[in-house]
Length: 87
Image 1 (cartoon, rainbow, N blue to C red):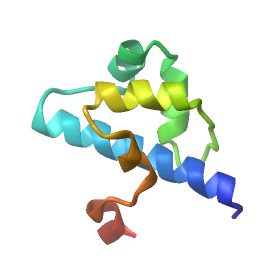
Image 2 (image 1 turned 180 degrees about the horizontal axis):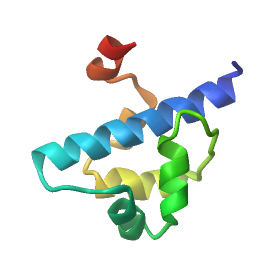
Image 3 (image 1 turned 135 degrees about the vertical axis):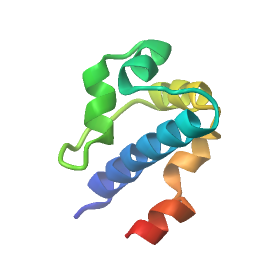
């Protein structure tokens, strides 16, 4: 798998991870609600979170997602402990 695909998959996994974590700790955020909050389509969020679809995104969109999920943007480029344990 090339680096670009690996990066998009990592970012997508992290978006899902931090959305679900936010949902458990603060308030429930569905893919639809997150899409609404950052002004993108629900299908974009779904594609980003899917392990079967390779979906790119702009830095600006990732920045908006990080703000909505109250997560530092650099976290989307790292492997969270929970994900490391599941692999």
